[in-house]
Image (cartoon, rainbow, N blue to C red; front, side):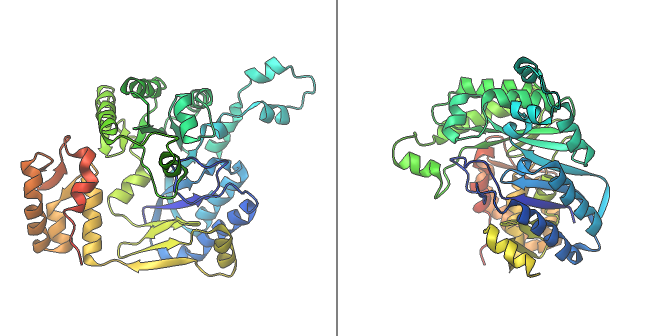
Length: 400
C-alpha cells in the first residue's frame, strides 16, 4: 500500500468554491476523531501484508485538530499497520491556524503582566516544533492568494498578512512545504497573478500546487455568479495564467511533474505521486476513497452517520469493482497529467495489445494538432495540450 489518507471534515467557515465534504459544526469533533481511529483498526486486515509509505491528513481543515489529536491518530496508524522508516507525513493547514494570534500567546503565557506589545511580537516557536515532534514532516498550506480581494471573494478564513507570516515561521522548522494557489479568479489581472507567484517564490518553498478556480455545482460561488454578484470565471484568462505560472516556476528551477503540481528536485509529493502512478491507498473518514488495484470504495458523506456506523463496527462505505476499461481509463487520465505519461509497454502488459492499438489510433488527431506526442514508447501531453489535458484524456477512454 502506498499510503493512508485521513479526512478531517471540519472547517471554520465555508469557502465559496469548495464542494468537498466538511462541516462548520465542531460538536462531533471528539467523537469523530475516535471514529477515525476505530476505522483504522477495523480496516487493518485489508493491508496487513503491505507497508505504509505515507500518511496524509486532508480535509476539510486538518489543522483545526490539536497536537494531541493528530498524535493520537498517527500513533493509531503505527499500532495497526507496518509503517516504513521515516514516512512522509503531510498535514494540510490553513494560515490562520498556523499563525497563532494574541489569544494563544496570552493563554499560554504564565506571566500576568505581559505587555500588549510583547504579545504582538511573540511567535509560538514551539508550535511548529510540536508538529515535528509527533512525526509530521511536510506541510501543505492553503494560501490560495496573497491579495485581500481574492481571499474575500473566496471567503477564506485568513488574510494576506497571516498567509505571509505563517510561511515565514514555517520555513524555520520545515524544509518540505507546499502551498496552494488559485488562478483564474474573476477580476484578478495577469500582473496580480504574477505577483502572487513571485511572493510565493520569495519564501524559498520547494513545492507549489496550483489550480484554476472552477465553479462546482451547489456551491456558494455558483450561486453568487448566478445572482450577478461575482463575475463568472473566464477560461481564456485562466489559460493565460496557467502558462504564466509554468514559465515563472520553470525560470526558478521547478519541475512541472503533474498538471497542477510543481516541485524542486527531491520534493515531489510522495503521497499524491502514488495516486497518479496507480498504487493502492486507504482512505479513512467521511467521504474518503480507497483503492486496492481492483476495486474502489468510498465512505458516506455524513459525519453523524459515519460515527454511528463505525461505533457499530460496520464500515459505512460503498464498493465498486472496477472493470478492465475502468482501470485502463484511469491509467490514461492520471498518466497524461504527469511527466511520466502513459507507457505503451505498460498498456500492453496490463491490458493487452488491442488497448495499445486503440490508444494509438485515438491519439492520431491529437498528435497532428501537437497536443500529444510519443517519446520512448510513452504517450505524453505537449505544453500546448496541458491546459486541455483532462478533455483529451476523456476522448481516449474505452467505454464498457
